[in-house]
Length: 213
Image (tube, rainbow, N blue to C red; front, side, top):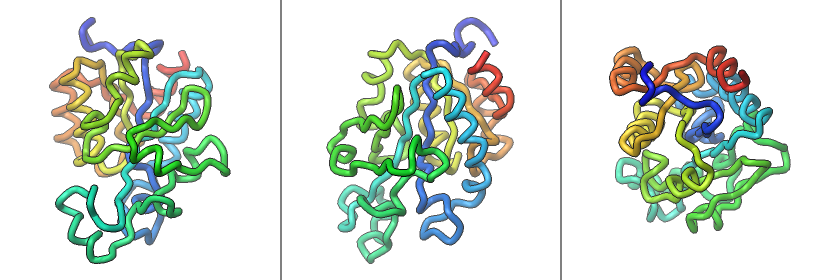
């Protein structure tokens, strides 16, 4: 990789995308195939970043019961009563494996108001209203104040939210690392397309070795 796209481990953030019970657990109302199998790899990434006190942002969705903040492709289902990542429910919570403690719960009111919820040293939760983590959120300012120039992405359902987040990061000139075995829904052509725009693709073993030095 050349100097313009090479990731920097000392100025990196880990973004976990939509790793919530309703999208992850077996039998959940919006279970995404392959997400639960990817959680152990996500956890290793989270633990690697925690060990170095590097920043982590868990990006989540929250769907109001009346569907007012839901993307159009799911709005009709939520309006009809589908209970998906509803604020305050167990289904909206981060999966237990990624939480810094079992007592931690999302503060839905703060998150829906656009605030970051601190849950540990350098570790936060952020609500995003649509696919990408940068769209109508304060993520860019949050990263700039911490001198972050490299974004590491993993999480739930690559074709939608992780991929959109990666492209948003790229168009903002962040250096990007994608971890495919820590992400559900990955397919070969999509990975090649990321490599073609300068994204560093690292499996979990390589990513952990890189971040921990």
